[in-house]
Image 1 (spheres, rainbow, N blue to C red):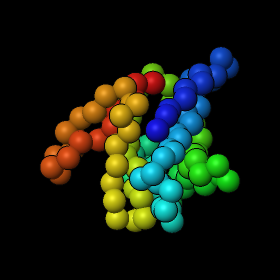
Image 2: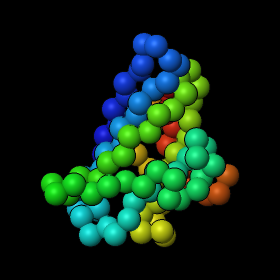
Image 3: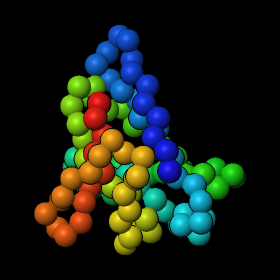
Image 4: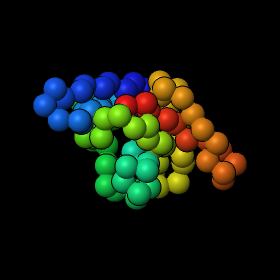
Length: 101
C-alpha cells in the first residue's frame, strides 16, 4: 500500500495516487477508493489493475483539509491504508484512514 501526494502550485489541489500491491489484492476482481470526497459511493474512484498486479487510481483532492477514506474490495471487504496520515473511529465499529492535505 502506498499513497503519493503531489500539490499543484497554481491551484489548491493535491493529486493523490492510491496504490495497492501484494497477496491480499492479487485475486481481487474490483477495488474502489471511497471516502468523504466522493460521498462514500463505490464506483466513483475505481482502481485499475496493472500487469504487475498493482492496483492504483489518482484522485484530485482539495488541499488544506483532511479527508477520510477506505478501500472497498470486491464490493464486500473494507480495508484501511497503514500508509495514511492517521485513522479515526467511524462510529460503525471500525476506523477510517485519514489523509492530511
